[in-house]
Figure 1 (cartoon, rainbow, N blue to C red):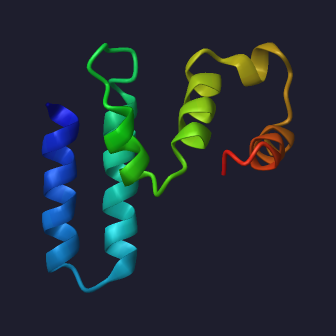
Figure 2 (cartoon, rainbow, N blue to C red):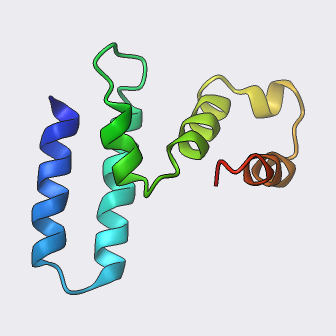
Length: 91
């Protein structure tokens, strides 16, 4: 339900907003809020995909790497990880 409410607010704000930078900021903020609930069964990946402009796999993968501290644990270079996600067409 939370994802639907957030998506509805974003659609309303997008219709009222004339500045694309504000819209992009609001969508990014909504994505952050939704990612907080990624471990819940009712996480709506389809809403998240819309809000992330079709880049849900990238955002989810990077969020999980950060959440579980995998970048530091495996001594990964952040730029290399982002490049890998890009090559996998996650970005």
